[in-house]
Length: 211
Image 1 (cartoon, rainbow, N blue to C red):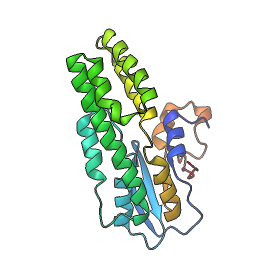
Image 2: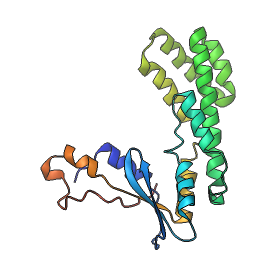
Image 3: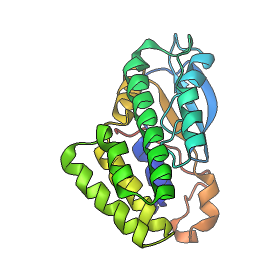
Image 4: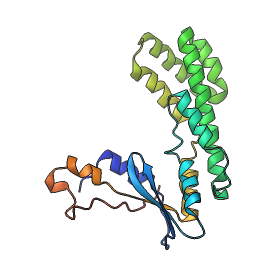
């Protein structure tokens, strides 16, 4: 069966969980798809929900400052969050905070139409060798007017040079906790040609994959 891009993304993002007897299970949404999040004793359903709340999917590095602040709010320490996620939460909160500072700098410099202001604001966030490239991208975006793709390219370039986003630490922690997502792709079957649909008609059960 040919997988859609969304299915492939889900498979790549699922952590590899060692074989174990799953004692707890909660239903969650992962990139718009219904999933069962499973974990062994002594993890409770409350702890599983707390883990999912701080996951990269629930704390996206979005373009909206408001959405970024919501991500930062979800990353606040909780007594129900396992300690093994501490390093990830620290890394993720730092990445979200950096992205907020970047978006604020980008908005202010766009309003002022000032490449110099933009470069000065993001200088503490990137290596000097990367700063020139981002500054040139900003100038090109100004010349392109209100082209969304030009400004999106700046965001993509910044994401590549702004440091780790914590995702590897998240999946490493889930492997230690022996937690896994099991997802169904039934909603995609109607979009597939009959020859590519699962013969069982039950959808594709996600097998946790190594990230």
